[in-house]
Structure formats: structure tokens, C-alpha cells
Image (tube, rainbow, N blue to C red; front, side, top):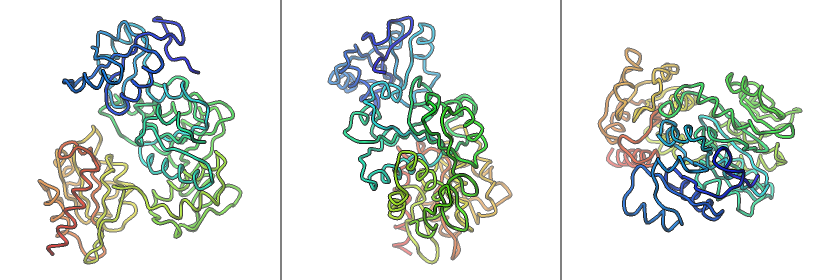
Length: 446
């Protein structure tokens, strides 16, 4: 599995020219790896300046062009590089293999245990939880992939298990990637500005277990019809989880494992909203699949406070609680947040990713009002037309002020945008921090 390139351009394992598309954190890690393996690496970067050329040089590579793909033996696009980027047309015409960093990491993998986690929502939380469960059990683990550290770096760490969060972008260009445990949490409309269709998106996700064998495990959401249907193609053992059904499930406010084994009471979780419970069940199922005891999983769950910008409580003032859910960049993730509350003032909007914001009406009975922000404010307003009051705001400060005015004692105000942040902010984290600051300023002057 140490070979990389194949096809018309060269024999398996040949070290020739490789083109890396994009020079962000993943592109840099891939470049370091390929240079160390003896490849002649050229960087294709759409936005270049003198610093880009200098960075490429320091990595042992050079800047190239799309035309260089025709004479390459390998192309590695960074996550998020569109399938409509011209490098793909040239690679297809020239029969040059295109693989992701995840595939490259697998081929270089020194055979520790690898667990991969994908899904539209909850990937980072479940990846973090599973790594904590492994550590609690006395094993060393690293959370990597889409969560932060590139997988190509993490696979060489001195740890027992690598837990990889993998996106559809990364799975799209895999060939032999084979996690011992493959977790698919859920699927809903997302990234349709990258994937041409929902079917294309789902097919990419399904590749998480395409390379598995009969000894491997697929962990799937029993309550997601599309995921369950796709699991019929999983080569190994299928383990299910879900709130109402599944091998790992919730019953009478208790989380259960197979054979009637109690994991813990819902009330013993630091936070027991529906998606928190689902994430806990998925992580426990994956943990048992790699040999972690229920005691270790239970201990990790009991101390897990959640991650920043994921329904994080900011303030409880005047009987109103304010939550930062800035990471919610799809309608599905907004709906998951809303289902945890009875009466909500929702702040939503940003830059739409080609998704149907009308889906937000599914939980309209929980909403007291909606504050629409960002480029998608008109689409948000249209989604709730004649259903609930909608106020448009031109800044986060104005949005928080409007939400505070609309809320009543017992309500929650939730920033759960359902859109990307790149109209007003550089990241969802920056958006969430601005929300938190605005909430605290409003409270200070009230």
C-alpha cells in the first residue's frame, strides 16, 4: 500500500511529477510528504503572490500551472477545490490519477488502527468524543483529518489509534482507503455549491466503507433512511445507533448498548439535547468496535462539555438563554438545534451554499421570531413568510438587539445561521465570537 501513482503515466510507485492543487494547511502537508518521498512537486494555486512562491520553495516544490497536469503522474487536490476546477478536465483527458490527501495518507499508513467518521452534522463532536474515549481507556489516540491536523501528518504519530474526520470532498477521490471502523452519522443537503447533485454528495460519503473488508465495521444511523439504505453495500459488520431505534439507542431517558447494557442516564450527560444523545450513542458504538470498554466511554461522556460554537450557552439573563450555534451552516443543523427547545428566537442567514432554506419551516411551531442576517436575509425572510415575525438586521449587534427585544422569559435566542459565514466573516468561529461579544455588550448596558 505504499505505492501512489498508477495509470497510463507510469508504473505503481514511480516517483515522477506530482501536482498539488492548493497550498493551505492540507496542501502544505501533502507537499512535504511527496517531496520526502522523492516526487517532483508542482503547486497549482489560484491566488498567488511572492509569498506563495517562497512558501512552495521552502517546501521543496515550485509553482506550476494547470497545463502541468497533462505531464504529471499524480494530482492531489486540497479539500474544497471544486470538481469543476480545470485541473480535473486536464487530468481526465491525460489519464492522470487524482487522489485526495486522505487516500494518500492511507497508502502511507504504518498500520495503526484507523477510524473514519463522516456525516453532514456532528462529525467533529463524534471524532473528539471517540478520541477522548480511547484516551480514557488507556490507549493513545489523535483526532485528525477535517478536524484540524491533516491525516497525512497524523498517521505518522506515535499513537495506537488515529480517529479521522473525513469530508465528502476528501472521500470523493479515494480508491483504497480502508478504515477498520467507518462511521456515517447522517446526511442532509450540504455543499451543493461543490457537489452537482445530492446523489453525487451521497455517493462521495458512501466511499467511507467502499474499501472495507469483511472484518471491518460500519457504524450507521438507524434513523436516516438514506444512510441505512447505503449501508447495504458495506462489506463488513453493520452496527446501528439512533434515538428511538438501533443497536445503541435511547429508551426511557437512558442510553443503551446491545444486550441490554446500560451506558448512562441521559441526565448524566453534561448536555442532553437530541443531537447530543445521538452523538454520544454513535461515539460509544465506534468505541466498542475498537475495543473500548463501556466504563471508559461512560467516563468520557460524563465530562464532555461540547465544542465551541455548537449550541454553546453564552448567557442566561432575564429568563432568556443565549446560545452560539455558529457552526450550524446547513438547514439540517439548524433543525437539529431547534428540536432541543420549545420557544426560540432564531438568528439565521449568511452566505447560502445552494441549499433550500425553506426546510427551516419544519420547526416553525417552535419559533417566536426570526432575525434574518447577511446575504441570505431575503431567502430567510421568504422561508418564514406569513409564518412568524421576521426582522432583518444589518449587523450582528443589531441582530442581537432585535432578538433580545423579541424574546420573552423562558425563550432561548439561538444564533444558528444555516449558512456559511463568508459574507460578513472569515469563519464560523469569528461569527460566533462576534455574537458572543454582542450578547455580552447588550447585557452590560441593560
